[in-house]
Image (cartoon, rainbow, N blue to C red; front, side, top):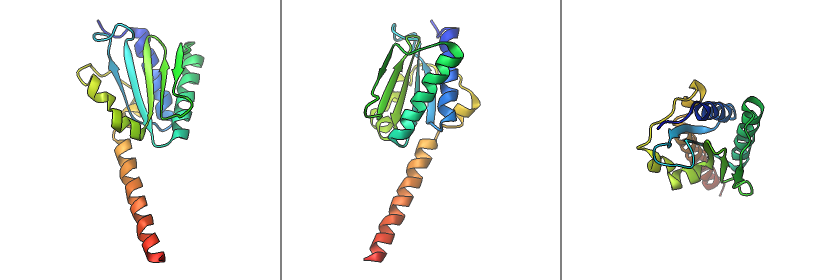
Length: 150
């Protein structure tokens, strides 16, 4: 069994919405052969809570406006560290970058086929690592500056 056309359409629209809000490392898996509850998972991440919320809001708005789809469940809003949107046909996970690394959902689904995504979403691959590296360099620069001021 493979993901339905409806699921694929939802995934592509959600992925484009996430990319438009600068999500990192967007990827989608066809989990229809291993899970009976949904066809596909979309994973995306962001470096801070505010951006996680922004991505989630954009995905929800775009799926509602363009495909008349509303989530049956939304979890994790309060902390915005890992927000889950359940559309039955698909499940969207938007995680803070730290949670994405810690929980490594890709490891769980690596044997499932990846779904084709819009070019903008594909271009986000590796952005999380780039951001982490840039942040580490900035933090190191601040430490150096603190040492000079003392």
